[in-house]
Every structure is written in structure tokens, then in C-alpha cells.
Length: 215
Image (cartoon, rainbow, N blue to C red; front, side, top):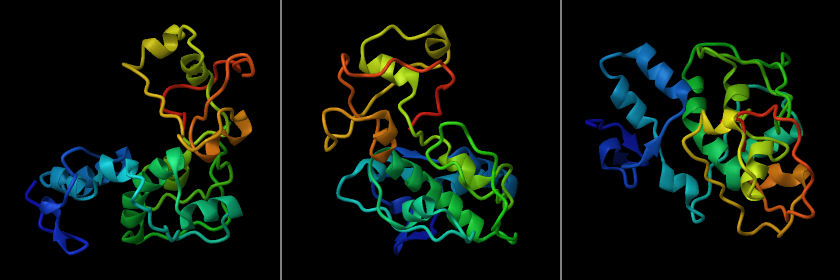
């Protein structure tokens, strides 16, 4: 992509590790809306190298939210370095937040988005900016407070339900190497899916989670 905008002093197209990169749907949607002919270049400029998300040597920078009066756990998440699934969510949120900062729209303070059942952060501002959905709630709803039932099935070797196999080409479970051997569902969102020993693992909940929602 012929993009010469800088990244830490390096022209965009000369960045390391960008051969395999990812963007959120909100970044792609905004790129198409702002410039159809240059949408690919804009999306590439805001893409996040997958290696940067996964590298244990790279610390994610703090995100300064436009909204004020955030819950302490959400504010801590945005300001402090994260790991595991939280790290992935935060890295993908970065380009969205950068776009939001450049938008001429007021920041939400008191109004909250509709809570997502089972989400790690349920009390999230309802700010849209110029996006099509409340951007913070949209980007963070994949972080779950519990391990979804279909992920437990993978961990415990059970046959997956057809609603999973019909809609997903595959599932990759990356347990946290630093986590204890067992992890309670209530703490699973702290660093990844965790590991559950079959004879100690709780029975899976009703299948109310869907692919794409799990941390």
C-alpha cells in the first residue's frame, strides 16, 4: 500500500510486521465512508500487525478516553498495560479511539450503552461519535466474564454443537501460559480462557453465547 504517513517516524508502508495485520469493522467502515477510492490505504494505515498484539515484549500504550466518569475497572483497563484477550481488545481499540479523537462530536459522560449479558465491562459509555454503533461497547463486548460454553467444550474434548460448526471454520484456544492450572469462570476474563480440569470444571451453561463473543 502506497501510504507515506508516519508511524513513530517511519513511513506507513515501511513498517515492520505489517504483512499480516488486522482492523476492526469500525475502522473499515470509516475508511469506506471517508474515501472510497482510498479506503484500502486508510484501512492499511490503521491496521494493527498481528505480531504486535501477540508479542510478550511489547507493552500496549494507555488509551485516553474522551468520556469522563468511567467505572474504575474500565478506566484501569484503558490506562494500564494488559495481557491475553484484554490485550487483543485494547490493541484493536487503539485505531478506533484515534479516529474518534479526530471526530467533531461530543463525548458521552452519563449515558450508558445497553449492557451485554456476560460482558466483562457492562457499564460502558454510549458514545457514538461518527460511528454506526457505540464504539467502546462494540469493541469491548467480546471480553467475557465467563468462559463460553462452546469454548469449554473444546477444552474438555466434547463434540461441538452444530450452531458452532455451521458458522465457524475453526476455533483456536490459546491458554494463558502464566495462569494457574485451574481457573474459576469468574476470573477467566483476567488473562484469557484459562484451563479447566475436566473433573473439576462446572457444567457448561445454556448455549446463549455465540462465536465472536468470547474473549
